[in-house]
Image (cartoon, rainbow, N blue to C red; front, top):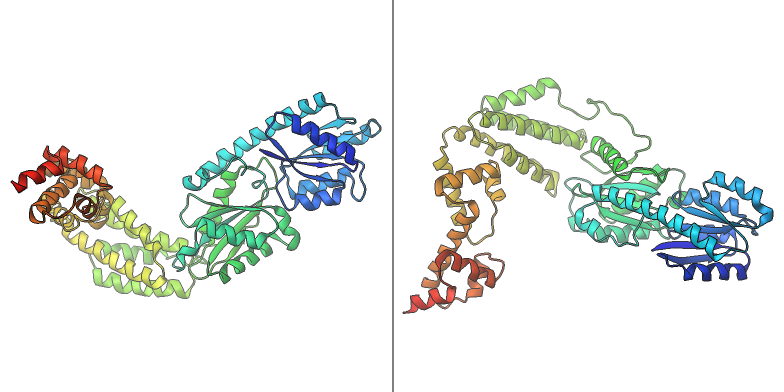
Length: 502
């Protein structure tokens, strides 16, 4: 459905145009009517409008002035001009303002239908492009909730990217609905729309550019927003940019702004960036490790110097917080550690890189910087231990350790990724080891183990109900448990229990 505004100082003509539009078989809705330009402009700044039908000669603000101001507020707005024969030359000048077309008074139904058909087709093409570009950057669940009415009227305005500061608590505040409510409160009465992006803990916001009437610059607006969120317990780094053209590519702009955030985001306290005027930084300003220190860490890993590495790491972590280092530098250091350990172990024929990368990413989920430092220290210590022992591990030895771990956790739903992370190997390597030793897949092996435990429990605790068994062994429901039980034993749980009781 497309929202239409009609602006005409003659009420009979306005009513006639509205009546003609209501009779057309198009997905349109006359959302607002106004009798002068000032009234129309005020309404435009409060709600999204797709198509403006406006007279030229009106009191207070004429049609051309309205179009000029309206395009600043909503650049994607389509305009159809309504004029009399005497205004024809005046109307031709209006085409320079990118007016879609014009209609002569009195408006004929056939002419209105023809023009509306063409403008609706253009709007649909634009909406389709916007939705396609949104799908490339928005979280799938967030995109699935998008309604047909949530269209490009939000989008060709100002794009803002919000990224939660790492190691900050109050994580429950960072939900799409919570953030939407908070931003609606801040931007009111201008409309805004919040999407969860495909980047974890990062949100995409579109807001009517009319909000900038209250501020001297984009930066001032974003800084005011950052303080608003900070009061609500949401520490964030923010970047934003005006969408100057309806032809702007949302996906490209999102990745451009997101990249700027990644480069500039610091460890302590959020900040604001006007991505239209990014500030360049050097590696020294970012707090980067110099090449000598990088080599020192690499050599300590290669020499298996666990204690020396831990001491040097402690110094580095203190320096990070004192210098308010860029978050990108933490990621660079951890990637260096992953690369070095993975290279050394993979020389021995084990694929562990993915397991290390998964574990490294989880470090940034910690609530505080202190927790991050403890987890990083412990994890690197485990990597040294793994390095020392991995060369001695045979495939059978690794399987025995995984088998023991799985049996200890048979009442908890665990995945192949959980095992990979626990033993610092890739999921595919876990799969190969289990298949080689047991001749079955991980799923078959794990399921058989749980069914075997179900049989033992039915024998030892005959009063236990099947639903209790199903829940205890983390099956999704009792029906599925019964189905799997019969596949592995040849008997239903009821038949098996009857045999036990004989």
